[in-house]
Each structure stands twice: as C-alpha cells, then as structure tokens.
Image (tube, rainbow, N blue to C red; front, top):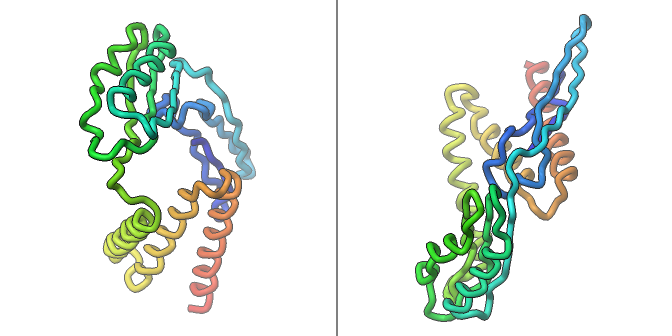
Length: 211
C-alpha cells in the first residue's frame, strides 16, 4: 500500500509496487512518487497513478455446511462464471468443513480447469476443519509469535543499541501490532503509528540531551 507521513525532520514515503503481487493489493492504486527538493531543502511529493495492466477477478465465498462434493460443484460454477480472457482469477474458499473432512479432500486441479480463458487461477484456501479451534487459542498463538519476534529483534538490535536493544525491540513489535490491527481503519492505524513514533523518538532525544 502507498503511504507517506512525517518522520522526524523528514518524510517517510513508499509508493507501493507497480505490479499487483497479492490479490488483497488489487483495490489499491498503482503508481510512483515524483519527489522534488527546492534550493531551501523543502520537499514536495506528487503521486503519479498508473492504470493497472492486469485485471483480477476475485471471488470470495463461504462454503460452511456443504459436503466436499458440494463445495467442488459450487466452486466450479463460480470459477466458470468469473472466467475472463487475460484476467487473473482468485477463488477464496471460506467456511468450516464438515466433520471428518480435510482441505486435502478437495480436488483443486478440477477447480482450476473450470476456467479456460483466464491467464491464471489462484486458489486461496481459508477453509477450517470442524476440529480446529478459533478464538482465544488463535489470539494466544499470535501473542506467542509477537513474544518470539521481540526476543529475536532484541538479539538483532544488541550490537547497535546495546542496553537499549530491548526497548527498541518492544517498540518495533508494538508498531507492527498497530499497523496489523484490522479493527482500525487505515487512516487511524497510520495516525496511531505516527504518534507512537514521535513519542518514542521524542523520549530518546530528551534522554540524549540530558546525557
């Protein structure tokens, strides 16, 4: 995703890739930044949008309550209807499989061949088995990942930040949590991240001044 915001005394700017690599990126405009710096060092950024050269047909469907043959039949119909010459067709399988069924039971080759004109058929399997537990366990798993990431980052930062490595690692993890929080809108995530960055580096500057 393209993003730009004030970072310290400068500007952090990322225009995003020119090509769509993930289907979730498709709604975002493609383009690049034209950056100009005047004689006084003032910077201006202009976004130049480009028309997306490749079309994505994205199908998301919930298959909860259907048996495997019924899932395949319904998915084949959806793929066939969305088939279009030159497009990339993305089928997102959502829902809970019936008891005893697994994701491996689905004939994915059959789903792909249901389209004859599309450039490529990409299947995103988000189906869950009835035995899989979601909710608190998933949250606990995410926290475990963040905890492990914090420890690794602390080791990585040790040479550069020495005794401050832990603080920088914790801040990095905290920032990632904010930017990954789907409960907030994009603008809210951005503003929250900017505030945390300013607060964090503001504290560091005060400490450096005292020393």
